Figure 1: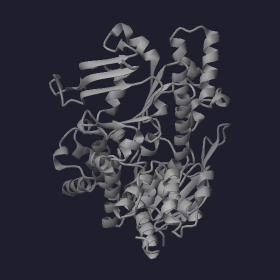
Figure 2: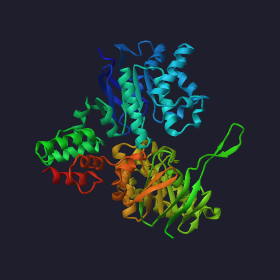
Figure 3: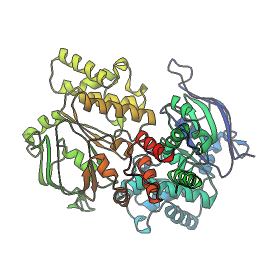
Figure 4: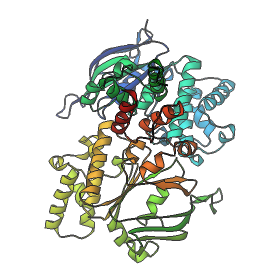
Length: 287
Length: 284
């Protein structure tokens, strides 16, 4: 059985008023345990609304969200428990830091889960390690950290709950290229080591191409595509009609294919492209 | 002296310790100098904390140098009497459009700047219309800003600056929060204002694909200017950029790596079209 099942999900804001707006329109999909899924779509396409329904912050207007086969709204009073299992890191999470020390901030989630002091401590240390926060930062005030460190601290706070599903909404926005690469690599390593399911909302096609196995494309409140990453990024033209694009490298290889060079469609990374091109040249005896 | 002249500027922020005492920490800018010509398009690159945004805030007297001087069209930014004149000449656009829009109707938001300059109302009307047309948002002039997409909001924020008729716009990561379409809308607008209206542009960005459109690229590191030159010159220094936590466009990186594998390419491309045409020659 799939870990997460979404069926006929619709979310309408301000329903029944002249301002009614359907943010998510009748979508269904399933996510397997251990998947790393990218969610892309233009601004206002419904991505953020969708992820907030997955951990019960927003109640569906119609349809269901099931975790391990159980409707998360079956017992509305226990919805809090769902939030421990589906951890959501918002956009610019560093604005949500509030505690006196970094360690206390990271401990907030696990403490509320009712874990023992010892276990909370363990969780804080291991979460901090996953996001690459040095030990000496843990006793500092979160407000004395740099922007990148604050972001890491905020993400650690969600990882510390050890959720089955970790959802990150634009975790790399505003970070410099190296900061972006390092954070993505850490999320990827966390995913590999723990085997947890990760959903990554991003406007960077390059980032999604780099780490995700599957990609979900939202367009005007509908789920337009949901397939493997290379399948989605082989449809450059279809994506551009939705205000999206493929990574630059994918588009370069596509253009070369169109010009008659036999390369592979849906090439996602620079290293892969280098491999393809040198292999082709060697095959032709030109390298 | 050029239109913008930054001369040996140093700056450090003050932090308050637990007893409320102010102390200065490590310098954010450490002897930065550069000159920008009227009508030039400059991209400012650098990793987080390299001092880029602090430079941007020096260009319209939001911050003034603790050492050194900044001159805008000959006006010293340290002279408080000139602050308003300087801000009228140099407009600043920030990352998050939601923090920059103040009114509940698009055209009122754009009128906010000129109203504060005490401009007669017929002229404000004209300026607002012109500014909205320049960023291609005229048809949305009666909408509420919250109903717009990110790219549209950012273009309204730019229109609000344009309506003050500045000589120069400084943009601090104007596309960081936008989707690909919004990003190209904003970039097209910036290019148009620079090329057609002759407005000087200083843009901070983490996207190398945007930086390659500039006439001149400055790379900041550790409070200093690490390297500068045309986009071609700067992005050919792939190793140097990588060492300082920066990236190059994927097109450039691909050819750089192919060259290392022995593929003969006499230069490095900056954009997709250039890259494809170079590779076609080698491959076909």
